[in-house]
Amino acid sequence: YKRQGLSELAERVQRHGAKIVAQLNHSGKMAQEDTAAGRPIPVPSPVTPSRSDMFPVLTRAEIGNFIKAAGPDGKGPQYYEMSVEQIAETVAGFAAAANRAQRAGFDGIELHAGHGYLLANFLSPYTNQRSDDYGGCAENRARFLLETIRAVRTATTDNFPIIVRLDAREYRVEGGITPEDCVITARLCEQAGADAIDVSAYGSVSHAIAFTEAPLVHEPGGFIPFATAVKKAVGIPVIGVGRIEPEVAEQHIGAGDFDFLALGRRLLADPELPNKLAAGQDNAIRPCIYCYICVSQIFINKQVCCAVNHSTGREHEGDIIACSSIGKNILVIGGGPGGMEAARLLAEKGHRVSLWEKDRDLG
Image (tube, rainbow, N blue to C red; front, side, top):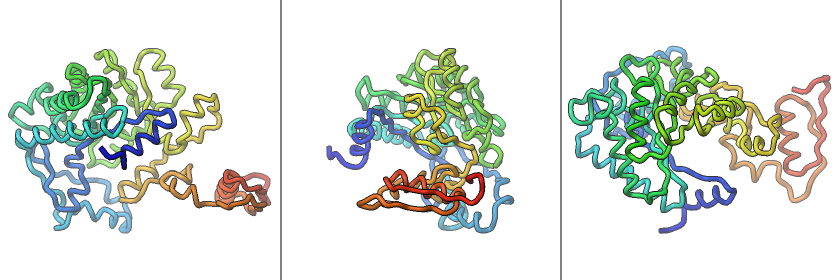
């Protein structure tokens, strides 16, 4: 097996003492690239179209970035209801992917069974209207996921961790996933061989406001009650997520409400956050201001960026910006945000920098 691509990535991550887990996912009805290419998309049941309230608040230029969502014929995504045979093929695909991840040197995998993706579509009583063994009661709706967990366990060694990400609730979805459904599914996942449960949530894509309810919850610690409910129901570790500040996580982990903290937006703002916490440098952490510029770029098919971290999405520029074989004496005139960032980058590269500002305060 050639050591290239993902193998090299795993090796480089582990070189720094970190672990790396591959998240395995079938995007299902959320598969933009399939829509753009005109490929039919698998779903558990026929999809009922819903009108989005997002477009009236977008500019014409912003709407132009959504052109891929219309597909090559302008009619939007095309769906088909999965057969039992196609479900089995997809289960085998997940197992093969997990096997490749282990051979590439990854430390585990996470099955993404949330956020409107294919496995979540089967778990949701709203999107799963099947009448066969894969629809109906919560146990049947979880069957696809449980078969996937067992197949992954068979395709990998016994000590290879399997994490499962679940939605605890579908916001603004009448008849969607409830916290009670999530607890049932979490128990079944544990019985099937899962090693940890990552508790998230989702909301209807028809309502723009739902994105600040889930999965990018704006309420601080908004998903903590969900993680706590799952923790009471299972014996395997539970991962909490959803705008949980480190000091809050420490309190809840100490109280036994969940076992691990997952961070997204805060690591885009400051990738060094874990190292700074470990070194007791909490005051040096660059704060996330929860402005949503990071995810908004994805919606309009642009690369991720961050309002407080110039380097996010531009890490490749680090080796070329402000580089010189010798340190220089540099004067930056103007201490606004741009001047301060220029001075910071130059100083990081070893230059001797002076920053001049005519007003009393910087910024």
